Amino acid sequence: MTLPLIAPMLATPGTLPPTAQDARWAYETKQDGQRAVVYLPGDGTLVLRARSGEDISVAYPELRPLGAALGTTPAVLDGEILALDRQGRADFQLLQSRMGLVQAPAKAARLAATAPVHLVVFDVMHLADGSLLRLPYSRRRSRLEELALAGPTWSTPGALVGHGREALEATRAHGLEGLVCKRLDSPYEPGVRSRAWIKIRNMRTADVLVGGWLPGKGRLTGLPGAVLVGQRAGAGLRYVGSVGTGWSQAERTELAALLRDAATEVCPFDTVPAAPGARWVRPRLVGEVRYSTRTRAGMLRQPSWLRLRTDLTPEESAADLPNP
Picture (cartoon, one colour):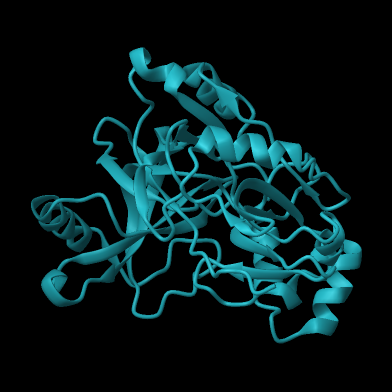
């Protein structure tokens, strides 16, 4: 049969629901991977589509056996493709080596054999010959669990009803990306960023030293568009990323003056970062940034500026970095 194309429903960033409404919500672990809508026509085949609608099936051949998991029952499923590290946690950096292989089936097959991905399935939007879009989340979740989807490279993770604060604390304790809160009575809204799904990302903070900056463009002309930051590694300064958000216009203006006063012709980082047009500064400005996770090389993911740490000297800033 021809299955309907369904755009994935999206979550809105937010905070935990009020305590009085806690029992009306389910809580799922937020996964750090590639969103995928899974089409199972019931003939043993499988099509994976990214959030953009692109067919990405070729990049993940290890997921093909899922095509036969429901026999002749057609289905459309929602899930996330993950690459897992040695501790079994999602590692987006590992996944990036697979995401660009839509036109490289031979390389995808080699990587599938040595480092297979894992698909977590968390919703079902179509089953047999009927749409489930209008059913509440709780009913869809029951139908999904009845499918008993568990295989060598796919699974259906649990969802906790109520106890949102405890669920969030558990994700933090285990170093997971965050939590998705889903209202039990919510229908599936294709392509909509809905308040019925709320995502909470666990963010971390770090003290960094500013070692350079990139000039802004447009309304930011003459101001820093981003700062290049590092952390102490032994006697040196290791580059850990570029931070381009978190300031007001007034704060950028103040920062621009401080950067001009610290200007130097010498890059202060151990290794010169790939940042064309960078302006270097002596690393004496300490800042606090918020970020989600680090890459295996120690780079900050999704960093944003919190504040200038005028209370800290460069020598008092963050402890030495561990080796990547």
